[in-house]
Image (cartoon, rainbow, N blue to C red):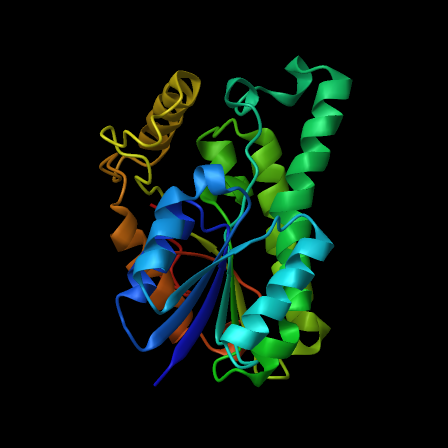
Length: 275
């Protein structure tokens, strides 16, 4: 049985891993949306080598780009889409990613917030709206909005994750997930979840094609230390990307419309475990 999936933000990282994993089943048709060819070399190569993978250039922060992507996807998928994965995200300057809000200039912060909201919050909402006709025609009617444990207030208060702009915009995605659900889509049979993928090693030390920025490496180390201190049962190891993909897809596969609207972890809809 054919399973059709669109992954928004598939250039690299977890987005690419979704496309790569799902494409291994030849019955699946997977479309990856990417913003720039310069960062999508692996996706473009996979699409070139795999008949069931298609790469479409689209900036999810732009309505015109998503509309054009929907038109192409409609032809590729014969008008039917089973799962939309909203994964695109904006992190901003590495040096400022973890900077406290009060340490930044108002002008710089305003620009960063606008850019982040456009991609991290507005993008998933627009993608869901514009792909809705295809999802309505699909069998499963599912939308997975990739969130983060850094968007959970209890987690951040226990283990300061110091990713303010990213966390704020992802928390908004969680509420957008609720808004999509209670607006009537649950009654149509839709299952819409905001899912935290936990801590995934999408940029291993030997990733020569995308070496980790020194500032990001430093900030990540501090975040890990904070999480270890707050959650001593966590071993401090990031999950392999394929494990993260398997777990989050399993969450979506098992979820039902009655559970729609929730912000959950990769451990399951009923789990209260984040790490």
